[in-house]
Length: 295
Image 1 (cartoon, rainbow, N blue to C red):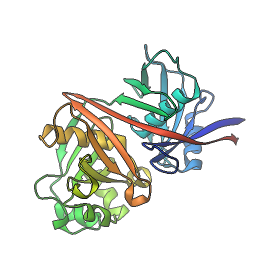
Image 2: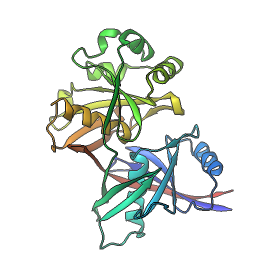
Image 3: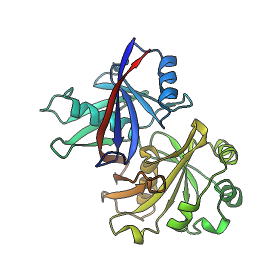
């Protein structure tokens, strides 16, 4: 059995930046266990499989798995990369810009913002934001992250939030402290389990050195599903943008830019807007490779 795959750098404008996604476009003949095995083989933060939808009105169904075999039910780089490939491959009606993707039991709108010589740009809606609980164990959290307690910002509280996946948002005092973080995977995994979160999104609003158009600088760690660090995490950027708008740190409906991946040598810029209960994420990407799995 031969299975074609593609490699897409997401939230990137040039190859070898952003967040790499392995994509298998014609996956209806693959069992769930085979999908998990392929995701382990690629060993990327997520591998996405395109299959026939079973929700009315959905154009494509996406199933995404981590190297640890966990299925991802949020819309982040796993979905963005799939639609960048779909738009660039000629599989979408060129006269149509609006589509619907099925992820789990959700039907979520997708829009192809642009197609052209400069590549494809896609925007998509995430699930409505939910703010679930605060985490007050500052000392334990700092220790799990390899930081001092005073590296955590004192004007914001760590909290678990979701726009499709529940992540712990941890405010940090400075970009230097974000870059110094060196998590202990076992301790962080336990803390995340105790707080009911999947991954940990460290962020700072101290972005003066990054330019006036950067609202937050972040890193993402997810030992829960076997991801040491992720260079661009849409399912964590969405809840962060929603929290910043809720708290008046950014204006409703205004563009929000989060920079991530710099510490990994894969700089990524994630564009978002928050308008009421609608969180919209946008980005571009580059198809950098294709091949065939001989199974």
